Each structure stands twice: as structure tokens, then as C-alpha cells.
Image 1 (cartoon, rainbow, N blue to C red):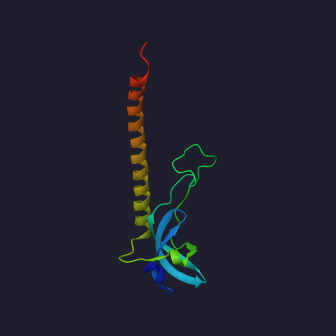
Image 2 (cartoon, one colour; image 1 turned 60 degrees about the horizontal axis):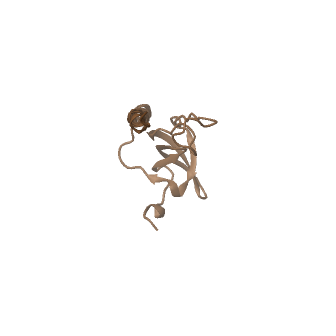
Length: 132
């Protein structure tokens, strides 16, 4: 068993929580069986947009918008999925802004990569076309 699986948490502990493709830092509020209730205090990774079952596919039936959990919003998670949060807890507003910017830059980089790939393929298409 890994060290994290042996981790024992207590009410009031600062934890890291993965929730619906986002990652948050928060305070453990309640433990009930195998589930724990966490109060969100910071956003570490903004949730991904779109259909998680069809990543990077813009042509899905429903392209989901996923908002980050709000400040002090509570979310249930499996206790085994929690991790201890170490270090200074960032301010919620600035952590939300930083997480949103990081997600924006990740998608912008992917967009630029796709555009460059399409340019290269357009040139290859010309080369591959049969000569008349």
C-alpha cells in the first residue's frame, strides 16, 4: 500500500481535492464513511471544458462549460483520493485567475500547434497530389 493510501486525515486539515477535472485546495469539514466533505479555499487547476469522454473534440453533442468551484463551496470526494496540502494556501481570487490563465495558455498552445500542423499538411497535400 502506498503512503497516501495510509494517510489519516482529520477535520480541519488542509487537503488537495480533484473534483470534476479541476484541482482545489481546501479544508476538510466532515468525514462520513469513505467520503469526505471539503470546503474549497483555492483553485489549483481550472476544470477542463468540453466533453471529457471525447477530449479535444469540438464536434460533440454538448460542449460542456465547467466553472471552478466557488470560494467556500463544499464538495464531497472519496477520502482515498484526497492528498495533504502543504505550503502556503493562495488567496482564492488570485488562485482562480492563475488557474484560468494556465488553462487558457494550455488551450492556446494547442490551438497554435493545430494551426501549424494544418499549414504543414497543406504543403504536404500539394506535394502528394498527383502530377498532371
